[in-house]
Length: 556
Image 1 (cartoon, rainbow, N blue to C red):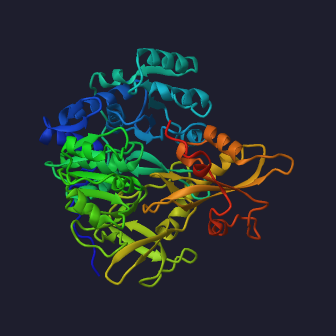
Image 2: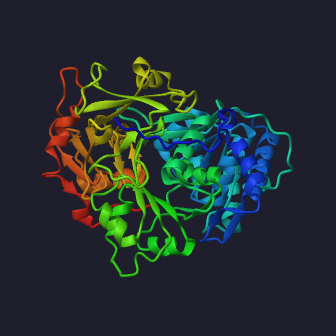
């Protein structure tokens, strides 16, 4: 049976697998070379400048009363200060907590309450979230403001006044960037570095506790996967509050000494121009991004670029045609989760069987496919739940922050249970088959069906509801959101009222596209909703927002 044998860590000494160590080393070896470039603002930072700013931010945080181990919320659109907040928190021994900028209300409050942060970095346009949810943000004493692209001095002043009136100590983030350097704590590879929230299944979203060694392992796997070197330029367009952009783009470039070019958001129509402008050699696609680029009008000059590799998850069936059209060397793909890094990866330039995600990274992970009811291993070729455990300490997560019960459930029988169904062929290739859980993935965002249900149930005319995934009309293996609603007997609600209510309370990407009003939900004898039966019903007879209004809500 063949396995993935190409993962050769950049730094052999795993005791140095920390963000401060890697920052320090790259400042020493690549100091005057550019790491970060932001074309939209013209900003450029060398490895040495990045190291200096990170140390100043870390010193400034400690000087303002934060302590190693404290959590720092980062709620920002893509910008340099998002990266410096992350790197600065690492040098101070604090723990970064990136939060989706679309979150507000219960989605936002759950995550803040869970991690009990002492500080937050945000922009004036998002300051109202911290005011509206002041009770949930009770542990936050400092808010550091940095302007977004559309903010000016007036918006900074208004946000500062608003936050100050709510009891926060407010400072511009630029004060941290200019703070005098001071002694910083020693940070260990086993210390907690980040808490990234991932969508729940039948419960609230869970904060994945990622130690420094886990973050480095994840990012360095990407270095091996894409064959990234200091001669490369990595172009990334996804939001930094997702791991795909932080520890699968920015961090691999930091480890490899490569140039990292950051765009504020993805644009299919601008993608090729951005690839050419940045001289990108590596980039990544998540979900429907590849499909959107493929559907752009083709020209004879599409292959006129320096791109050699795309890290796509998943890779579409037209990958060979895409490779020829844009002149690529390779597509690479993996199966991984925030909790476990990437135990399955595809070798660079090796032809894969159709639909295969990759091979086991056998030197670093143990994997079993098991019956989800019994945890007994299934035979080769059969569908089983992917379970994983690491072969090196602190290279996977420490559990879920503040949720010991969920941690124990996930690590049942000393294996991490992914909740995803895969099969393996006799040669060792793994194939993703289906989600065994109720999480939904739409437009690159993981969505907790439970959290969407809780928001919709706040409407007085909704007695019961169940949210499920239904297939999207693309090849990306993604979903659309559908809700089945049982109306209150004495109150009425129609689809337009429900959509308007959801628009006010849910992130734009979590608003259901399909609404079906039913008399009752199918349930087990123990009153658990049988979502499999609802998924089988599909969208027939439902109200489709795209058909009714022509579009779904967009990013605000």
